[in-house]
Amino acid sequence: MSMLPNTTQVEKLISYMANKGRIPNTFMYARLIRTYCQQDNLNKAMKTFAQLVDNNVELSDYIVKDLAQQYTTPSTRQHLYTIWNYILHTNAQLDISSYNALILACAKTRTLLGEKIYYYMLESSLKSNLKVENNLMLMYINCGKFETARRIFDQLEPDAISYNILLNGSISHGMDFASSLFRTMPQQLKSAHTYSTLLRGCAKWRNVTFAVELYDSMPKELLQEPRVANECITMFAKLMDIERAEQVFTQLENKTFVSWTSMLGAYRTCANGEKAVKLFYEMIANDYKPNNYAYGNVLTACSRAHMPEQAMKIYLEMKKYHYKPTIENNNIMVDVLARCENVDKAIEFAKTLEKTDVVTWTTILSACVKQNKIEQGIVAGEMAIEMDPLDPSAYTLYAGLLRAAGRYEEAQAIRDKITALGLSTKPGTSMIEYQGEQIMFYSRSENPFSEEIEQGSEEFLRKLEQHGYKPDVSIIHTRVPENEESKKVKLFQHSERSALIFLLGRTKDEKTPIKIFSTLQICGDCHTVFALASKVYDREIQITAREQAHVFKNGKCSCNNKW
Image (tube, rainbow, N blue to C red):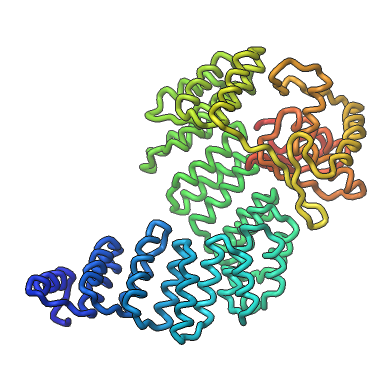
């Protein structure tokens, strides 16, 4: 084979031998398949494998491993079944590394075929090893069988890979098991990967207590690892601890592009447009070229901070850096104009764009609802539904706009269409952490501790009214007209308000900040309530509402009432 330096010559020789009625050997097929695999040409590799099958050529470990390494996504799963069936058909004698490669391929393609492969391997008188068991765990986790993976782990003498596989799988189910497993993990096995995984989990589940424990226990040299530091920045931003995010970023010596964009994302979350703009230009001065994510972060920060001039300046400068705005960038500029200027300017800007989508028009529609721009909202609503007839948020916003205008029959027609199309929106939820336990609150009255919250609401409302609070019932839009008292009740059923009342009642003697994580944007009346409550109860109140942080202190919000 030394006389065959390239793929073409191997192909020609195999074709020549086939024409002469001679069957190429395993080594020749292995050479060709390996070359195709090295070129990431799976189609040609599988066609060559099909020729091998037609000629009933014996398999080799090289062929199995080379092909198995190409099976990395569910779309390649059928190829894995093809090679496995031929292994069974020919009773191929493979070594442990081939079985390990096949089970890893099953993990990557998310198929439980690896279970059969594993038992077939054991029946072949081969003993399993830790690499195989680790990949078997990974397969079960990727296929949604976490408890099975746990049982395998419990029978092992686990190494760092074993722990990291189980930790990574566990954060899909919350942080309780992950935190307890981490505490039992030998320190010498903990790595940058371990901490990165758990930091990402804390950010996902908004687990404040374990996040602080994790950060405080982390070897400080790991904070000079960019991937660990970047996860820290993102996590602290999502947990509304911008000071710690800044500290990690400042102390990181070898900042990567992701470090800069992560910090930009943090300023986006806390709506600090001035710091975002300053950091954006510092990033460019450090020879980092902005991408879609960087532009998205800085423009959104400008929008939330009501800095339309600065946002437009950055947007128009994109050509300077040979960057063509994406539809996401354009939609943020629509938000900037609708939020900071007026919806007419936003509509004019949208009409100049080469392409718009449902987000473009729901953004304008949302601004119209806030600004009570009925006619413009109708235009935006019709455009949004035309862009995506199956987007429930477009119908919901449109119906709310019509109800606010007193056009109840038209609003009801929109609601009926939502029902007819079988569309639904996810109910708003708010999450808090209390005594190490995470508690979820829901809109309406479906809340834990509902009696306790109802009793606390009376005292809460009384205190706020003594300081001048008047409920803004205009934001409650019902299918039919309702009296003010019933609308007040609905205001107090907002999930974030229930969470606040619960925490104020349970932590009367504390002065620590209250943290609430909400899936919906905070309404105008809740914003007023939170600001007033921070003054009345002398407590700092933090809430992340749809990825934007609001920090209330002494009656004022960090967003300066711009959101």
